Length: 244
Ligand SMILES: [Zn+2]
Image 1 (cartoon, rainbow, N blue to C red):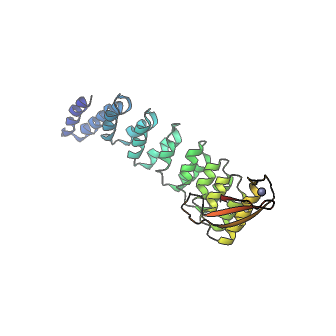
Image 2: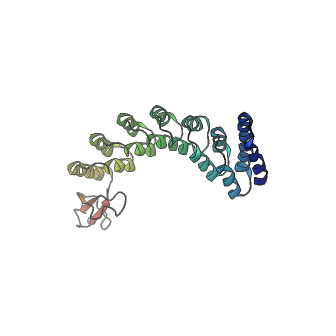
Image 3: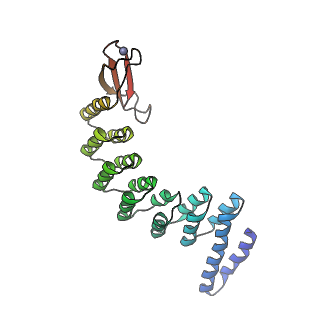
């Protein structure tokens, strides 16, 4: 198959540029067929590498069944309107990858607020720079994954504190808390976490715990362990430590 394509490609030398252009598209349609359907992944990939027409790449992104070919096709698309078309007009599982390549803020906001796929909403939120929009998404999206993606982009500590104190989801609260530097606010958050998370003594089963928080000795220990909450059992003195 690839041998046939090479023959077609030689026609590019035609002196009439219009014919050459049409020949190129015809050639790329053949390549597209190979990229989508050849049994050999290497051959599919080689064919894809030779395609530069944005519409043909978009067709591959929306219709190929091999996820690696789809990702590679999206990677090759540089035309923003084509990327927007893929996100808005297809229902493929890789629309988030196309969304991540979009820079137009108004389009990103529209997608982040309205797309029915939470993965696509989160991918778009990660590219939004307007803090008030991010705040709206972080506080109101029904999906915690999207709220977290938005919270991670916010820098206003008062907004972050609100989220770290009040979101229903512990991962969203943590994502917001990680961006807060004010130690006294972090203490309040730690106490609030204790209130939200019922901790029981693992030695005597008592729920009668006193909470104290301190800085994690090694902040790189895990992604969330920048603060340690110690729950001290009032009945037996046992200490249960949890990373915030
Ligand atoms: Zn105890």
